[in-house]
Length: 416
Ligand code: SF4
Image (cartoon, rainbow, N blue to C red):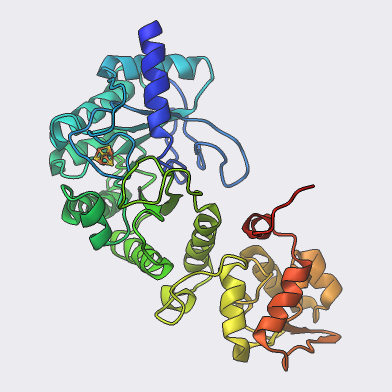
């Protein structure tokens, strides 16, 4: 028992660097009187509706034949190495589930001998859980780059979500920090999964007996700040991944300095949390607000501003697009107004059918007036800032902003 506890503490700790474990979109029902039931929106910490749920998040092993400089599990790192057996992971999952500790499993791994050897073990765990224990909880499996199509196919039959980590956003960065790896080994399983998810999804609509295949789709993770990449490179890569592989999510993980290596930021350097957050906001703008990558970052503006969010940053660079009349403009234009979220934009469209909206009504709808007032026209209000320079408007907004990220970004020491 002590041995298992020790393995659990080592392999759970090693798994914490992977952030690609939130999930949504899976709806595996408990039809066979088995164990568990995966509802939509399960994730490791908080679901989109704010519920906190938990997954058993572990590595199968922290042995690895590779030596990726940014990874704590790299073979040259002098750490204690342990592995679970297939049965140990199955037993842990079932026991934790029965005790109500977890609602699912997130399983990744270092690479034992080769990709197939490792992937085969991951698949066996998922298969045992589903077929022997009739476990209907959520399962997220990492796909090992270089694993065969047959094993990836089998993984998709048992897991809700599969993910292949891109890790380093640029090819040159990958060559520098993980020279034994190649991008093609990461892209190939993504292509395979995209094709299978579409093909079997379409087949299932016609033949009900077609098995479900990775119902929560695929995701990936990029490490931010390890290889000197610009935000432009990261955001363009994310756009490509969504477009080419129909990914459900791209996760951004600020690099935590774990290696003393002159190719990497020094141990003790700050984790780029604000940058990570701005990238998530950019991702949101591309997925839900209709922005293209090159509107948010480009050759002229390769870095995201850290003190303001990317939508405000875009608006200040494009003041000629404003003011927007919220009582007349189309939805796609209303979505561009800083301080207006997707829900508020939809409510504006609904509410204005019954009469022109004024500031008070916009406030009730949930519009952040502090920001929006510089960019809109509404009943009884015409913005008076059109002749102001962008940097002035930015100053006004920052002066009244309550953003926690602004506080974090502040360089001034706070002594009291
Ligand atoms: S292959 Fe994966 S686990 Fe192994 S060193 Fe590289 S990133 Fe770490």
